Image: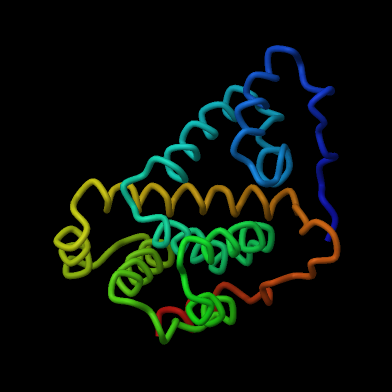
Length: 196
C-alpha cells in the first residue's frame, strides 16, 4: 500500500497555514504526517479538526488509558494500520496492558480487561457497530463515568471513525518497514468476533 497523497512539507504550505502547522508540530508524533497530511489540504477544516482532536487527546474528561483504548478499538474496527501503529505505544505508556492490546489486535474480545475497560469496550463496539447503545449499557456508563465523560467518549469514538476513514482513504502507510500490525479483516468478520 502506498500513500495516495504526496507528503506536504512545512515550506510548501501557504504562509497563512503555517501557524496551524506550528500547532500540529507541537503535539503530533507524526509531524505533518498521519492524518494531518490529508487534513492540511483543507486548511479551514484542518483547524477545526485539530482543535477537536486536541481536546479529545489532551483535555478530555476520559482517563488517558481508556481514551487510548477507545482509539485502538476504532483502529481495529476499521483495519486502520497507521492509527493502530501510532496509538499502541501511547496506550501502553498510559497503562493499557499488552494482553488487552494483543487480544484486540487479533480481533478478539480482550479477556483481561479491567471493569472500566470492559465498559468502554462494550460502549464503543456497540456504538460503532450498531450505531446505538442499549439502555442498560448507557445507564451503566453514565452511572460509572458521568454524563460529560460519556459524551466525551462518544465524540472521541466518532471522531476516530473519521480519522480511520481519512487514513484508509488516503492509504497512509506505516513509516519504515514497520509491517502491518493489523490483519485486514472483512467488516462482517470483525463484527462477528467483537460482538460475540
